[in-house]
Picture 1 (cartoon, rainbow, N blue to C red):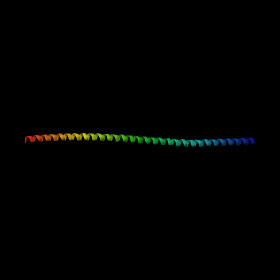
Picture 2: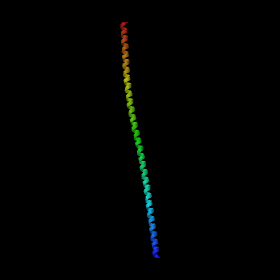
Picture 3: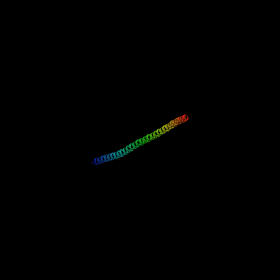
Picture 4: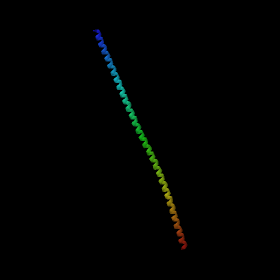
Length: 110
């Protein structure tokens, strides 16, 4: 009879020990799962931040390219305006010379 009681207590102790070990494993798994989720969230956050940084960098580069292009076009426009002004002055000067020549001829005739 004592043997049956001892066996029963040993079985109960083994079951309790197995249950404690199962709970510990579950707790560890829960911690592991929470840690994995935290790491997963952190990685996703870092990836999103990197994408935003890349987008900002791309926008800044595009902005700089556009700024350089505008400066080039402004320089070309200024150059064309200067050439046009020189042509206009040359043309006006040639017209003035022609008028002066005609006046000189008219004075000679008169």
